[in-house]
Image 1: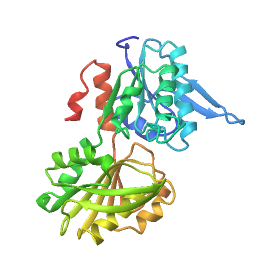
Image 2: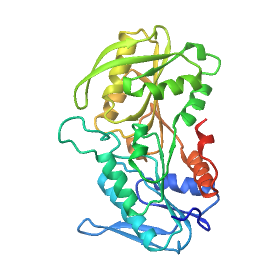
Image 3: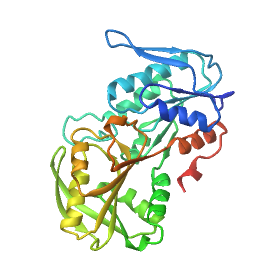
Length: 319
C-alpha cells in the first residue's frame, strides 16, 4: 500500500455529488472527471476522464437509497481506479449503509455490515473516511485504516448559538439506551444535563415508550440520534417527553437523514419544533420540510481529507 500519492484527486459517484463538489471547492480543487451511468439492463458503467496514476484518489459516495445500486457504484469506481494505478484510494463514505446489520440478532442472521466492509476492501480501498457509524465497533470490521468523524463537531456549535444565553433551560435526551454514549458526548460539549428514554421495540419499526430517566419538566429538549429512518422512534419520544415528562419544546438532531416513508408525514404532524440533520445523504428539494434544516459536512470532510493526504493526524477533528 502506498503511504502517499503525488497529488489529491476527488471523484464522486451519483449519491451525493453536491457534497463532493463542495469538498473539492473548499480545498480549491476541481472535481475529478468521471461518469457513472447505467446500461439498459441495469449494469453500472464507470468512465474515468483523466489520469490518476500515482495520485491520492478520494471517492465520495454515501451508501444511501438506492442502497445496493450506490454500493455497486462505489465498488466498481474503486476497481477502475485500482486498475488505473492510483497511488492510494480512500473511500469517503459519509453514510455507511447496512451499518444497522452489525450483529446476529437471531439465529442464522447475516452480518451485512461486515460483508460490506470486506467488499469495499476487496474493491481496492486503502482506507475509509466515514461519519457516525451506527456503532463504532464497525471500524473493526475493516482490515484497513478507518477515520471515523463525529457529527457532534458540527451539531453542538449550531445549538450553542441557537440557545445562546439560555443554555440552562436545555436538557439533552438520548432516544434509547443504544444512543446514550452519543448523547452524553453532545451533552458534555453543550454543557447540559442528560436524560434517557427507556423503550421497548416489540418488532421492527414499531416502538413502545416505557419510561423517561431524568428530569425534563419545564425544559427545552434536544433529542440526539445518529440517524432518522421512518422517524417512529423520534416522534414517539417527542410525544412522551411532552405528555409524560412535561417538556416545553422539542428540538431534535441527527447526523443522517435517511427519512424513509412515512417519515415526512410523521415529522410534519409531530410535536418536534425543528429537526436538524447533516447533509451526509443528499435531500431532494421536493422532499424537504420547513421544520427540517440541513448543516453542511463538506468543510469537516475536506479538512480530514487534507490531513490524510499530508499524513497528519485526524484526531484533532474529534475534539
